[in-house]
Image 1 (tube, one colour):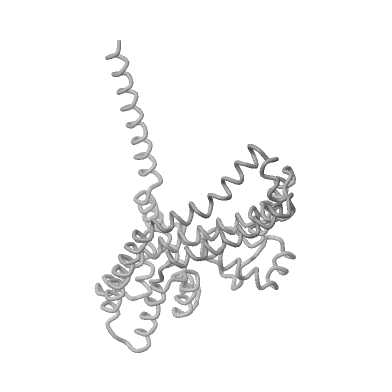
Image 2 (tube, rainbow, N blue to C red):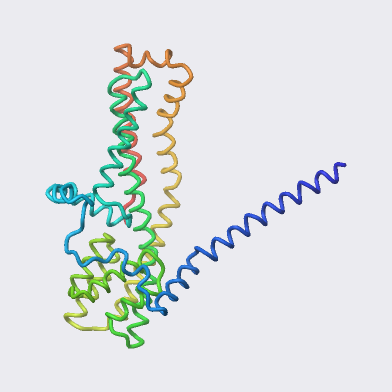
Length: 325
């Protein structure tokens, strides 16, 4: 009986592993990078535009909202331009109006939750602000992840461009080849630059626009090298090869720094979140016991002192573990 039971467990485990692996192979074959690359090539061979025209627009000014009145109003606000630049760099398809609506909705949800608990006014305001900041944090996280992925793709893109130039292709054709052959999200940016050139935008302005959409120092080096070569001449393929080598060396050094500072980052997260997690659990388990911190004047002073010390500690740890390369 025991042998049958353990055999059944082994077979169930094997079936689960095979099922997960089969699902992963199906997803990779249908939606993975290789499948997307094949689909893009089939679209190009069939003559359809595909994804190359998704973000291209002949409009000189981006729309901030679908509502005409709100769009004109937002274009007059400087903060809306910064939000639009952040959304553009993150690769998200939100408009400024949609971002502001999400922020207001998250703030309203935070206010609804804060009003259900007997908390002091400052804590309620902090909860509302924290909930309202969730869309901004989401967009900034998407921006960081996208820029990191583009930064990892830059050495291969520089080598690809150098090989295409050595093969005799013109630089304008190289942009189209890179946009068709490389993976997202860098290939999409090269397609946008190529389409802008087709619309009549000068090549220098199109490349500088790509640098504005992707605020990476390595990409600016690459674009500056291309612009200087177009004015003064020289071996652009060799220059791009040297830039690729420099980018790879810097990425390798950055990876070593991240490994060495991983313990410090983990300590910062634990020490920064531990007071809030413990405080939230105490509020849920025994609110009368914790309420002395904001009902008693001495408890309020202790909260201010603890908050100041926590802020100083977080800033100090961040300065220690943040190493600029």
